[in-house]
Each structure stands twice: as structure tokens, then as C-alpha cells.
Image 1 (cartoon, rainbow, N blue to C red):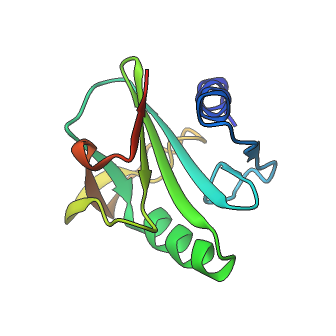
Image 2 (cartoon, rainbow, N blue to C red):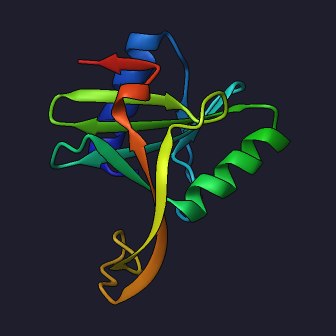
Length: 130
């Protein structure tokens, strides 16, 4: 987990009274979990009214959370605010489209491939921290 994501996780735990733990497995499709939630964390460097989520992460985490009887939380920091979405309880995606994007952002693989991405309306967040 990157330092920025750890900082976001710590703030969520503090502000929401949770005990989410970062997942140590480098290739996991979510960043943290506890006995009620799995959490995907993003740190965006720009503000977007509709923030992006990859369909692969969205669909995997939604199914995995249902199998484990947990809620799938998507947390996105933009500027100084953290927007929290419970994607298990409420579908916040407004549209899906194919985009040319880097294969991976974590490992420096900048080769472009087509990815299906959705856009999450920040007005549908269940909580805003910051």
C-alpha cells in the first residue's frame, strides 16, 4: 500500500470508528478490510465530479464482498476531501465506457490497453471526510 493510501485508510478508521487493516498481498484487488467491509482506495490528484473505477475491480470486489457477506466500499480522495461510497448498498455508477489506459499504474507498465471503466457520481457518496 502506498503512503497516500495508508494516510487515507488511517483517516477513514479515525473518522468512522473502524478498524480496517491494509491487505499485505501486493496483487489483491482491494486495499483493506475488516469483518464488515472490503475497501478500494484511490488518491486522485485532480478533482472530478464523476470519479473513475475499473470494471474489473468493481465487478470482482462486488462479487467477493457478497461471497464474504461484507460491503464493498470505494474511497476516493480528491483535493482535501475523501468521498466514501458503499457500492454494495447503492450503485453510484452513471455510465460505462471503453478507454485507452495504461496496463498498470503501480509497476511502471505504460503500455496502453482498452479498459472498461465506470464513473461514480460524487454526489452519491454516503460520507465525505475533510
